[in-house]
Image 1 (cartoon, helix red, strand yellow):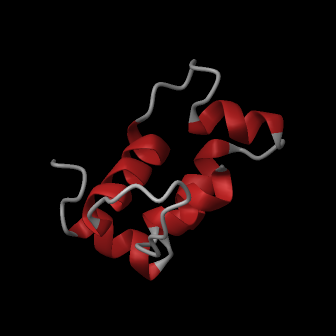
Image 2 (cartoon, rainbow, N blue to C red; image 1 turned 30 degrees about the vertical axis):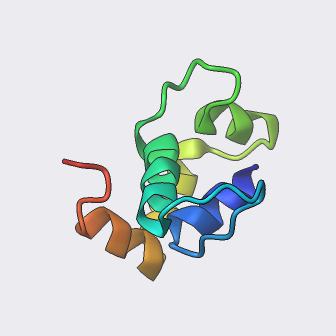
Length: 80
């Protein structure tokens, strides 16, 4: 789940379920889940990082360094 979200956030979109989606919408969903999700939900980015013993804030900082993620964030993929 986490690996797929990172790939989607970078703009490397590949559908796992065969559903037709625009690449921008999958990237936007992944960026929202990572950067603006609700931390207390069991399937949130923060919860998954906690299970894997990864600091979610550290992971977000590292993800911001990736060119594809930066482009998505800079392009306003999150709508604001």
